[in-house]
Amino acid sequence: MTELFQYRTCADAVVAAGDYLAKQLSESEGNLTLLLAGGSCLNAVRQAVKELDDSVLGRIHLAQIDERVVPPDDPASNWLQIKDSVGAKLNKFASALPMVPSVEEPDDLAISYEMQLMGLLETADETIGVYGIGEDGHIAGMLSTPDPGEFTQFLDGRLVVGFEGRDFTRLTTTAALLTKLSEIVLLTCGPAKVKAVEKINLELAPHKHPAQLLKDASRVSLFVGEELA
Image 1 (cartoon, one colour):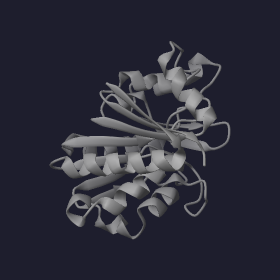
Image 2 (tube, helix red, strand yellow):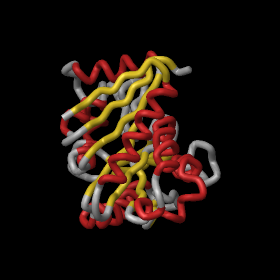
Image 3 (cartoon, rainbow, N blue to C red):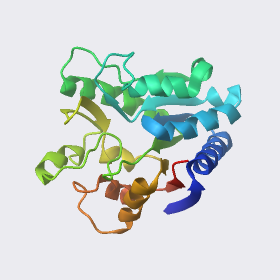
Image 4 (cartoon, rainbow, N blue to C red):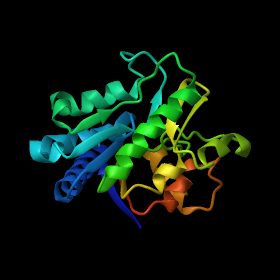
């Protein structure tokens, strides 16, 4: 099931998405796994964390949806962005599982992270992923490509893959994760990204528009701000 919540401004979309995420987390029971992408979708997380008390945070296990293999203090690091979004409350969470880049090969990093992530998912009573969407329709590190063969790495059943992207060496969760989550909360803003969201309704090949894969998820709540301001 997919629900679309559309707002004129990005600020309104951020508040709505943050309030919704806080409500879903607060009203859930048991162990929670909360998976976060980087970028502007973390504004919803920043909003939600303000509303959550320590008893809720203490049931949430944080994990990452994707990462760029860069030094930990690099602004391109999604984990650095995640830490900034939750601030001083990071130590209130039950646990945190960052995708820590190292000298290992991307495939080895992916295998290691997948094993740890599977452990979290198997013990979670509910799982929520917070995603954004790119102007080209990419979600997580699943980038669009003119070559369908290049995209198959995201569809082959592995939960996490490592690969050399056009810009960075990347780690990303895949289509397999989308089908395992209890819910996906997606926040995006601006005219170009509104068009990317609208294309979800079309029948496009996933390698051309990876957000098509959201159709396989159990529940998706889309929060869209039409204007950036």
